[in-house]
Amino acid sequence: MRLVCLAAMAALLLAQGAQAQSKPAGLTKILEAELSRFAGPGGPYHAGVYIKHLGTGEVAQVRGDDTFDSASTIKVVILVMAFQMADQKKLNLSERYTIKDSDLRTGSGIFQYHDPGLNPTLRDVLTEMVITSDNAATDIMLAKVGGKDAVNAWLKQNGYTVSHLNHSVYTVRRVRYERIDPKYASLTPEDIYALGTSNTRFTASRKDLIAQVAADVRAKPDGQRILNVRSLSEDWLAIVTPAEMGRLLESIESGTIASKAACDEMKRMMRAQQAGTRKIPHWLSVPVAHKTGENNEVTNDIGMIYAKSGTIIMSIYSGGYTGLAGDADDRLGAVARLVVEYFDGVQ
Image (cartoon, rainbow, N blue to C red; front, side):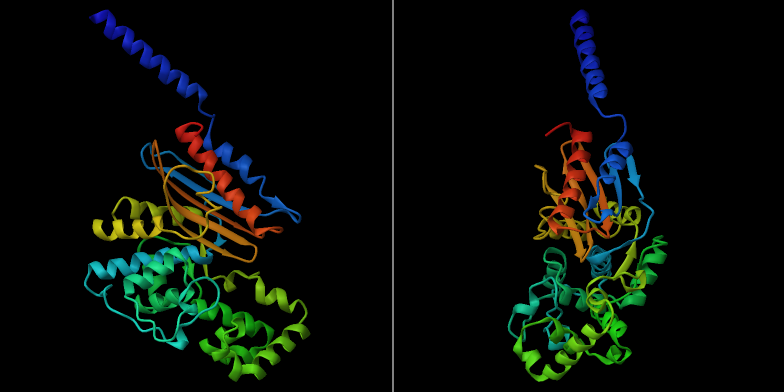
């Protein structure tokens, strides 16, 4: 019997040794090599990634403390704040909110395509903010949690020393028109929406404004790029680092940032993500809960990968890419596949 046990132990040790030998030398080196491939017709571009395996505690990062344009990934901060307030009975997520003309935003999201007077619950609004990255939902919930100053105070109080919200969705768009001409500082949310929509309910009464803006953009050197690309960090929706956003995700996954029920609901929303299928989840066969972010020349994704070996936190950012957006998204997916293969073995 003793010989059988010893033989079994030896076989197990041999198997573990073989598995260890087959594991790549180091995840950081793998990530460095893969991120060096982040280039398009215009050459290499800025990318950073933070990885943590919650089962083993292993951490790897490349430019994890660099700053990036958050795009819509900052919406996870608003999500957490809303659920904390719900835990504290300061916000009722079953309360209904009637969406007004001044709430509508162009870009991602579905609320802008509904008839006036849509009356979702705040939980519905949060859900759309996450799964369709709805920009109208974002500014509604930003106001509900106290606005930009409240978000930045929360970040500082919770030890996020770099991440910082610069704008609402409304103001991040308005400031670019101001760069075309300072007179556009007076544009209302309805004006901004009219400049980016084909909805005649907004455009018909603003034909002169739309024509004037178009003329001013043409007259401004590099005017179209000023509108489309956030070249200055102060024009970004928010400034974040991959490591800080990774730490925020870990607090959701571990259930330490809010009640267990609240964290479970946040993860449920993130697992229902409707965008970014070519990003983290692209080549994976395991579940992913994530939040994407993108604008012109920027593509990001942050989330929890529920790998066979345990949960992996992944926070990846890139800015300044040229070429096709799909190719830039694919590179995020390729990194995710390498990370999962590192921990789980080849799928």
